[in-house]
Length: 322
Figure (tube, one colour):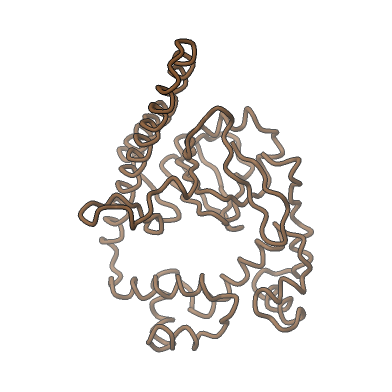
C-alpha cells in the first residue's frame, strides 16, 4: 500500500505503491484492514505522503493529527490530506474508517477537460475536514464501498483471461475499470464540494472577505519562505494590512501576522520531524539570517526550542515504514 522514499535533504515522504498486481492509481481499504497488516507501533508514527488521502470515519471516535494539530473525529468526519502534510493516526483503537489513496496523476489535468463539462476536479476546493450528518455519511460510505468493490472487478477476469489465452482482454478491462473509478471518484468529490459549498453559503461571513482570505492563504503558502512581513502581502494583494487582518480573523480567528508565523512554524516542524537537516540549514530555508533568531521565533509559538521539538518525536527509518 505505502512505500517509503529514500531519505532526502528535504521532507521524507511515503510513496503510493499498492501491492501487485493491483494496477490502479486509486486504492480503497478500511483502517481495520490496514491495522491487521501493519505493525502496531508503525500505526502511531507521523508520516508525510506523496499522494492524496481521504479518510471517512464510519465508526467510533478518534483524534487524528494533521500538521501536528489534533482534530477530534467521530462517525461522519471526512478528512482530506494533501501531499506533503504531516499525518498521524493517533493512539485511539475503537474506531474505523474508509481510506481512499490516489496519486495526483489519477486526476485529469484541467486543460484536457471540455470547457462545458466540469470533468477536472479542483481538490483545493475540498475542506480539510468536514462533518457529514447521518444521511450524508450513509451516502458517502455507499459510494466508497461501490468504488472499492468495482476496483476488484478486474481481479478474477485477469486470471480467467490468462487461462483462456486472451492476452488483450485484461488490458482493455483494466483501462475500463480505471475510467470507471475515475468518474465515480469525480462524482464523489464534486458531491462533497457541493455539501461544503452549501455549508459555507449559510455562514454569515461576506463572500468577498472569504475570497480575499483565500488569495492571502495561497500567497502565504507560496511565499512564506521569502516574505515574513505582512506589508509585503498587503502590497501584493492591493489592500491594507488592516483589511487583511480583519478577513483573516473572520476566517480562522487569528491575526494575519499570526497566520504567517503559524505557516512558517508548520514548515519548520515538518523539516525537523521528516529530515535530518541541521537547525541552521532549516533557518536559512525559512528566510532567517541567523539560527538564533529562528530558534527564538520557533520557541515563542511552539513553547520549546527546535532541537527539543525534534528530540520529542522519533521518525521511522525507511526499513520500518508502513
